[in-house]
Length: 118
Image (tube, rainbow, N blue to C red; front, side, top):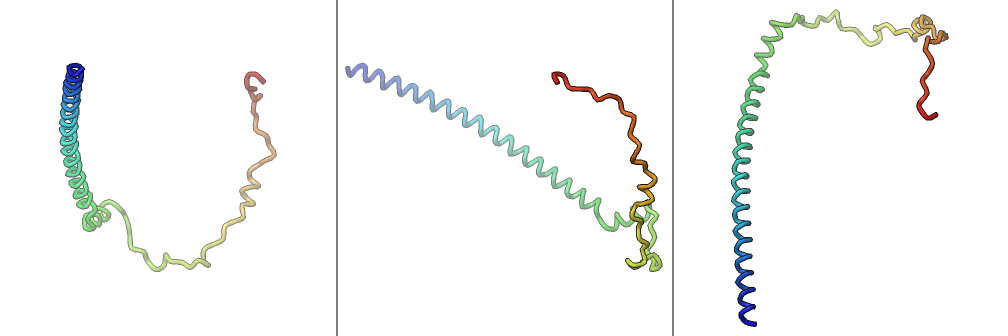
């Protein structure tokens, strides 16, 4: 009886050692993957920092001012172009437009296909 107990204990010990080694190597593999992902994250962070610096460089006010002067035909707003709200003419109620559209004429449409099974 004691011999069977020792055999079972030794087999359990060997089984638990195998299980511990599997966990150890799986953990080492995950640590390697984590280190690789950390390097990728650091590289992406560096790339984002470079893109932010480029964006700041492109959005410099003096650069945008020069581009607008070179490419746009803008003129300063003069006071004769400013009007009061009351001076803007009122729009029509749409009577002339609706009279031009004849709603009594039906469009020339062929027969409507029926769904199968009806």
